[in-house]
Length: 446
Image (cartoon, rainbow, N blue to C red; front, side, top):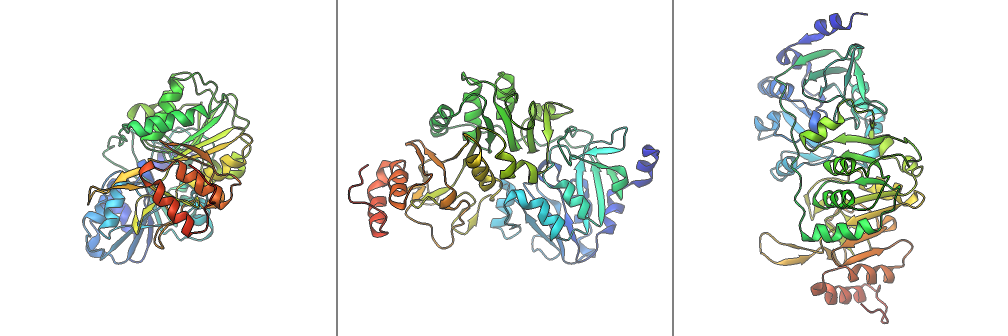
């Protein structure tokens, strides 16, 4: 079969490609750094021709034209699987909705329940065998294109080729249309600058990590601090199994700490589902046989993690109540990010032999509207707070004031432990609330 000829036959302009979108359609835009670009602009240009077009995406790192041209949501309704900073701002304006999920279920949502009329996403250039790499976003890409009635691939020459793994590519025979664009530079996620709290918390977590552990890191200043400290530590032969590949892993790799040779599955391979970071990180991904891209239903499956000895999961949260419930996606009714894979990795790391799951947070924050210092440890969540992790799954909690392990602990033990890592200025009030809630022993002491 002549793949070059088939490519030429399917090659078209963005304007012609998006003509397949009809009023009432469900359209998928891809995820994170492979969100479509020129196709988004071409679809936005059809605003006056269409009605009720529903678009799914997630972690968009750049403004979307369909939102920009439709500030009243008269035509395009955009929803996100996980909020980026941009999508959070759009949500605040009523221009974006969140799709609740546990990340490992995302591929099955598509395969079993969701309609996709048109899927459009960026891919790396076609190879000599007729395959396009899903590049920096494996995630649920394969499930999306399998379910889609029409598939449009937007080729970006600057995207790296990610090796698998599983489900890391799509063949020319599976695409309906190909478009070539302006090949925009890949968005670089700025390296977060850790603060004093991040550094202190990271130091406590690194002390709990053993040689040969497999590490999952979330995004933010704290995970970056953990990676930096690991790179400078005496730890050795660490592994990587993570939904998001971030620059902290590259730091560990360059320091010789990330060998993957002790992993009990996928030995010798750093496994991941999507990637966002520096240009150097994206270049590290390109055709690297030491990295393996997998769909999120593999990476985030606790049954897979249970096969990895000493799995260590490190994530952030927004607030914790003294029952041990964890909120990582909302502040009251304001949606901040999403569940993502936090619950997946909390569960998987716990059931791993020798595994540990850490949820970390600064004990306080400053209210921007009042300038008042407030506690991230609260007595109990209000009725509008989203609980990301149930108290029954909480494992290690870490603040700048200490680290506690809630596994198997009663309500009074949890209250004592969690209040012990709250900021001292708020502990007395938290104890009073715990007494009212009948979860405080009179003999408890802090």
